[in-house]
Image (tube, rainbow, N blue to C red; front, side, top):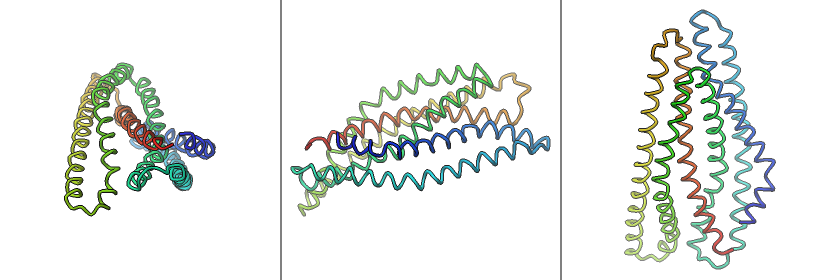
Length: 279
C-alpha cells in the first residue's frame, strides 16, 4: 500500500539507526563464544586477560541493547498509529467488525519491523559469523553445517503452503468475531467459538509437525557435528570445545529463521491484501 510505503520512508533514518544498534549488538554477541573459550582456557592457567575482554564485550552489548529498546518503542508505536489512522481514513465501506479486526491484524506489520527484521538481521549475522568460526576451527564440521541447510529447506517447502492456507482461513474467521459478538445470538456465538477452536487447533497441529521436524533435524546434525569435531582431536582444550559447541548450536538455531521468515511472509501478505481491499 502506497501510504504504508510513504510512512516507512519518512522513518527510514530512524529505522536505520535501530537496525544499526541491532547489528552492533549481534556482532558483539557473535564474538562471545570465542572469547569465552579463551577466557576459560586462560582462567585454568590463572590468566585473567581474556576475562577482562569478556567483561568489556558483555558491557557494551548491554549498553547498546538498552539504547535500542528505549528508542525503538517510540518509533514503532508512532508508525503503527499512522498506519491505522491512514487505513481508517480511507476505508469507508467495511463493516465495524472487519475494521476492528484489521486494525488489530495491522499490528503484525509493526511486529515484522520491530521483532522479525531484528531477528532476521541477527540470524544472518549469526549464520555467516558462526560458519566462519566453525570453518576456522574444523573444516569438516563446517561442510557438515552447510549440508544441514538442505533438510531445513525441504521441511519448509513441505509445510509452507499448508501454513499459509491456515493463516488465511484463521484471519477470515477472525474478521467475523466482532459482528457475531454484537448480534447477541447465543447460537451464533457458540458456533463461532467452536469453529475458532478447530481453526486454532489445526494451525497449532501444523506448527507442531513443522517444528518437531525442524528440531529433530537440528538435533541430528548437532550430534553428528560434535562427533566429527571431537573424533581423534586429542589436543582439544576445554575452552575450544565449549566455543565450538556454541557456534554449532548458534548456526543451527539461526537456520530456523528460514521457516519463521516464511511464516511471517504469509501472515504479512494476507494482512496487507485485506488492508488493500478497500483502497
